Length: 563
Image (cartoon, rainbow, N blue to C red):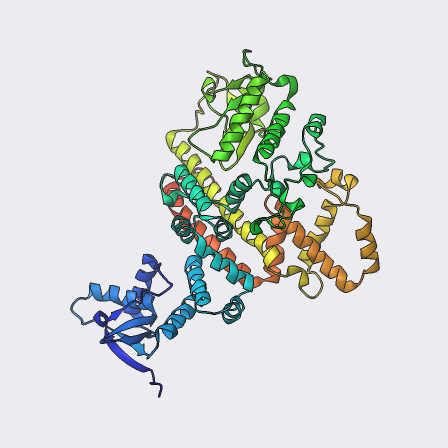
């Protein structure tokens, strides 16, 4: 006969956490706050334990147990006890109860969630059963389980938020040796784990270079039939198009499951050749303005600057950069060191001060070649030696304020980028195009904005759109299926594709994605915004406090009595 659970007050010294509890991380700040609430209001919900010999093991409520124990350590005069519901449970029943409690939390750690799902799979539960039980999709469960294949350093960075979840899932698909390689490169880039701050784009770029992803290759605009970016005649003579190449995994039966349906190059030499040729072609577009080796640096000409650091950046990116530098030298162009200038100008080409500084012959236009997550080929300006004037208004405090404000903006941009990356993932995960009912006013506005963006050369000149399409088969299909229901479905499907394809760089797509998903999925959207806002506030708190101390706001402007 099954024993009825009992409510008992049990001494804390007789209770211990379960080593099988999936939850391993407990915020000290949150524990201190919970402990204070318990001191003020008492323990509102008992913990659940099971008897193990003469002692007890926690099944549910380890966080409450830790908070009560923290209070007991401060008040040693009292004999610490905690209200418990005592249940007779087998090992399997207890473990399932632990997992259920942890997975129903709002703030569940993704790595702990992955462990819990993985343990349920090991216990014989199917992914479909797990998804149904916890209100998730099968794909969500599969991706979480995949996180269990991450090596420990990458798991730790995911738990701390240094690596976004979507990026962690991509890294988890790599073999262990590649994960180790990525982890080592991360260690070489940052002084401490707490400094690590990686976006999905950073990870995508690394994987692109490591696996030679053709759809994200630098040279893609030359390799495909794009009327706005025609390849050079020399390019067409030198290289076969990837679309028809047998070394493209998308053109043949691929032995590697992870590459099926994807377009990856399997000829690293050719991939590097195309990358080097592409960037050299871009550099040569400056023509006679490029400074030749042995010539004097003159204002009005363009100087190639070696802005790389051999101790910094990914190995395969360094190889491409080295080959590009070698080709530049072979063609007789100067490669200058940053040391020949008086520092890099902080203004860029669209800044109104640039023409003035050029006219005064204080700066020189340059092309810098650097290495970070990818090959950086950047157009910028350097000060001519002896021409960099100190800003008389920028005292040390003002300089510190400007630098802090720049750091604040960087974190803000990172937060927006991370949020956009998560929303972009919704385009593939959520069935936005299948929503019933007509488009809202906001959706309709953005839909027709996208239409203008894709309407052809005449509208391109008026609106700044960048691409168009004219396929007869699609037109015929639309004519034959033009019902009101299909129109709504096509509108949303079209918007969904645009938002997914362009939201990494197009501000219209980013804004549309936020507004449309705010309407379609209000509660998840609100939770996503809060999560990123809380993270942003936490990361910028010290910056804002220091700015206030020195009398500046987050824009780097001095705070006056009127502001």
